[in-house]
Length: 159
Image: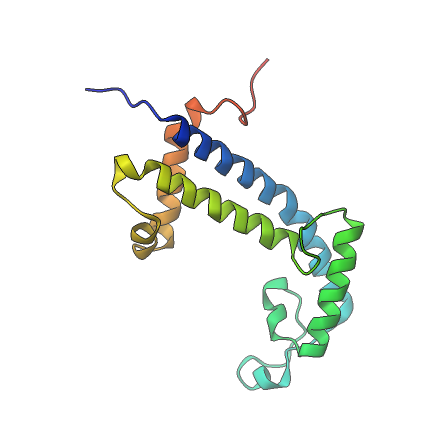
């Protein structure tokens, strides 16, 4: 049996995935904390156009912020931008959410990993995603476990 030998491209792709995962894990709690805090203080309710189906409860979950009225969302977004600046989170475009940017970078890194492995797996991003998000995530997880022993630049070393 032939021993697996990853290419430099495979190793680099895995390193990038590990880095973007760490980036997301660093950014997420900061962004979610200020978003939740802003929502709690804002006391904004679900917009009347959605209230028939969803009720008119106060929105406390950042994932539900799209249910606000446009005016309330604009105010929420403005407060989030100020909180981002206070938290010293930098983005290329002032209208960007640092968490969404980090998550986008992580998705791009995962897709590059799938592409780097495609010569061996005969799988594309589209093919994997068509089998479902769970299968896709499992593929990424297993691929990272396979490549982790070869990754030297981002994994903690023991002294």
